[in-house]
Amino acid sequence: MIQTFVHPRSCRFSSDFALNVNGCPVEVLRTDVADFAIFVYDATQGPAEIEVSLLDRSIQEHVIRPLSLELEGSVNEVGQLVFQMVAAHKVSVEIEGCRPLYVWANPPELNIPSEDDPNVLYFKSGQTYEVGRLRMESGQTLYIEGGAVLKGRVCAKDAHDITIRGLGILDGSYYGAQHGENAKSIFFERCQDVLVRDITMIHPSAWMIVPGACERVEICNVKQIGEVMCSDGIDIVGSKQVHVHDCFLRNNDDCVVVKAFLIHHDVHADFSADFRVSPEAILVENCTFANDPAGNAMEIGHELSVQRVSGVTFRNIDVLSVHGQGAVFSIHNNDRAIVEDILFEDIRIEHCWDKFIDFRISKSRFSSDTERGHIRNVTLRDINWLKSSNNDGYTISLIGGWDAEHRVENVTLENICFNGVPIQHIDELEINTRHADDVCLVEPAVATVS
Image (tube, rainbow, N blue to C red):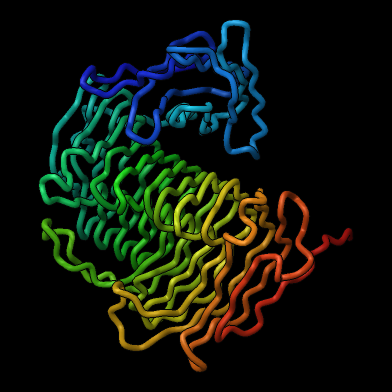
């Protein structure tokens, strides 16, 4: 089964691509950095055949990412790229000379809320709604139907049981720097039991999803295209028990970042709050990240004005790119926190440039504490980097403490591979260390048979 959507005619549509899935045309929308298509695919009904066409020429060179999916495409006799899906994947189709085309297949929605429910804010397909600031209350669900576009920002404060869902689009372009506005697209302050799922987010003017001092947050199957320099994807600020999974995030700054600090007033006073709560129990898994041109793919920091940050796991992640001056794996402790018990596991990197690992205790323009902190007990396990010869001598790793009392300690590197081959010596990472202890390359664990 394929379900497609008709978007408002005021949307920007692709001038480059056409897309068909099992013979059904799917609308392709446009941003300045990528085009994208949204549809529903029920994998229990059999394979989906995807046909991608260029409107002005035949397709020649192409690649379908993430490469770990092993989706092999071929060009047919009329110059279309054809490939199959057997699951609802989110992929980047990259054709020589074009911006990427993000093909986002979504599983069928379950338990769709009723538009007659008084606790449901329901926005129907085929229309654009300029809502500006939409404030949610406890027990409410915001449902953006596939084919609907909601322009504005969504926030909630001191609320519980909040849900944002639907296969529609949240468009942040209602705000923008041209108006002196940098509005976070989704902002939750001190909320509990929050769910954000299935939506597509485009054109942010600032950070895209921010749970601040929240507990029990789930972010699932969210798709993002961030274009401005500060378009962090998901900023987990002073929050606990957060689960981010099955998301596709393309951002011009950090894709997922863990922070804790006092957010100062900006042009929107409701976005100023004290989030100096120690983050813990955070799991990010089964996601695809593309980072360009600033920030990092997976970041802890810079602002960590709390006692402790602990229990953070990134697992089963495809990093399509870190094109700018950031890192794939980064911990920037610019304040007093003890950052400990951090795990990066089963990560595949298709391209990075400036830095591979960047773990540092430092002081920067983002610092608010005079005291420096610590980083300890960090593990990178089962990492595969598709390293190019162009990286040699340019892509480095940094692990550095502040001084003799504020050190980076116990960083374990287990089964770090370049192009599928485990490295044999830590120097292969072109790593630079300072005030760091027990940075160790270890043999991969071998499973035993009982």
